[in-house]
Amino acid sequence: MAGEGLPQISGDAAAPECRDAALLAQAMFNSPSGRVYAPLQLPEGMASELVLGASELDISGGDVLVNAGGFEKVPQEDLRSVYWEQDPAADARIVVRELNRGWRGDQYFLYLPDRTVAQPDFLRALAADDGRAYTTPVDGEWRPPLLFRLRATGGKWFIRMGQPFVPLDEWRVFGLAAGRYVQRCAIAFQPDAAQMDALLPGKLRYLLRLLDETIGPGNDEGTLQQTAWLRNGVQHVVANALLRPWAVSEEDAYNTRAEVDANLSAWAVNARRRALRLRILQGYPGAEHALAEHYRRDLAMPEARADAEAGRVLDILLRAHFVFPKNPGSP
Image (cartoon, rainbow, N blue to C red; front, side, top):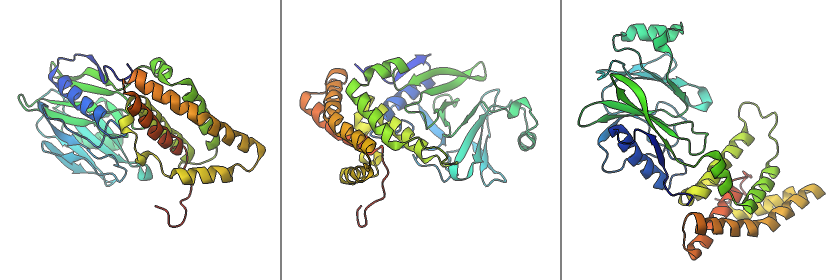
């Protein structure tokens, strides 16, 4: 079945940090969140505590890392900070840097300098960007890593959460081995690309192609890339629709169905657009039926629930393709 065995862990699954990461991954996979990295839900039974990270989904405002202790927050000139591990339990020290990227939010870089490197030397080398090995980050992503401490031993470990623009991106878990941080395991939230492609019902694939055609190419949109962001949001909804339909919610769509229908009708001002809109209307029932069949066959849903869930999810998935101006007075 599609969701059977997910999330899937590879590597040293018996390592204590991987056991805890697997518990967290399962909780996030089962959660109603459209993203498997936030809002963070720490399950009972973890042998670790979170010491540095961000738990909220929207971190675009920056300066969001929550420090539960053990890291010195060192302010930087760009109004962000470097988090310096104060008492490293390994040969390497964990350092996390926030880098202000303006309207795009913050980017987060993780460093593992030798514990003998002094903080002033590290900060000077970082500011000078002089190519020193210890100022080369091991991670640079738009989502900060999550840093944990094992309660029993005090040893720290961390999860590289993947990129937020990649639907259901995998986690990579790093722990200590011979005093150094190495990847202990990885956690995948979806099958490989070929299997995911095979899960997508043909009639739903056809409808999605038609809907994507209405969006247009999105050329010459500058740095905002509104069309690219819209398409990326749709990709997240499609992945959840196939594997985690409980995580598809009204938050994934901006407009009501009435607003979408009215605006699509107004959009169809020529023969080509009218034909495309007609094909969408004609293809919708078959796509809904195919999605319900996927839920029955691949997610083991009872028939009545599969039918209801397919109707709900496909309606949101269709609306996720559009951002029309709200009618005056509408919610």
